[in-house]
Image 1 (tube, rainbow, N blue to C red):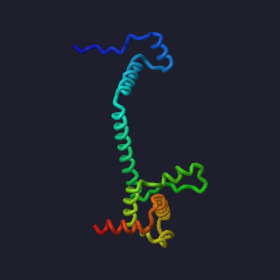
Image 2 (image 1 turned 90 degrees about the horizontal axis):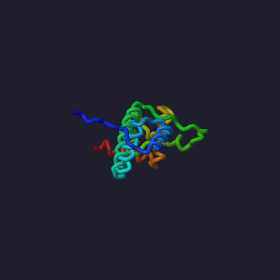
Image 3 (image 1 turned 180 degrees about the vertical axis):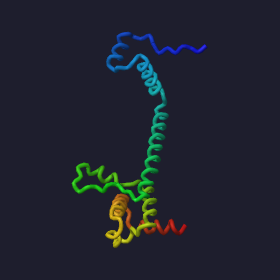
Image 4 (image 1 turned 135 degrees about the vertical axis):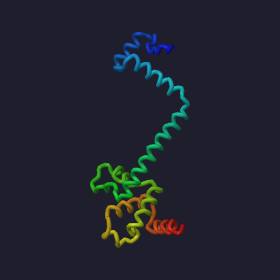
Amino acid sequence: MKPKVDFHIKADKAKADMAKELSGLTNRELYELGCQIAIEQNRNVLDTEILELHDAMDKVNELTKSIRLRLKDKEVPTRPSDFAEDGDDELRRNHLPLDLFKEIVLYYMDDYDITDLQELGNKNKEIFRFVLMNLSHHEMSINDVNELYKEINSE
């Protein structure tokens, strides 16, 4: 025979009524919330932080894949405007993590000669602007890109 599940807990009636009134939760929802709080309070803090780290890494990996696909389709972020009020976010949305930036630059090198400044006016200006913003952000030079390209192609 299946045991009866009872979420009606004998508790201070006044406290339970006040909790229901303030939260709008049912007895069951209050019980489940209390259980969740007890679990979280008694869980090792390190366990929680590790789980949060894994969730964040999963999100980063998911976003990185999406960004990589869009960048390889030659889609770039909107360039910062000259009259931006929130300047940090305006610039930050154009800055890639270094490893992803290197991968994308090498991918672009196959289609564009991004190290030839004469090409700036002839090809896709938005891509060049995006690459230059990231070069500046990572304190890299065109020569660094050339060396990286040579290194990858020599392997």
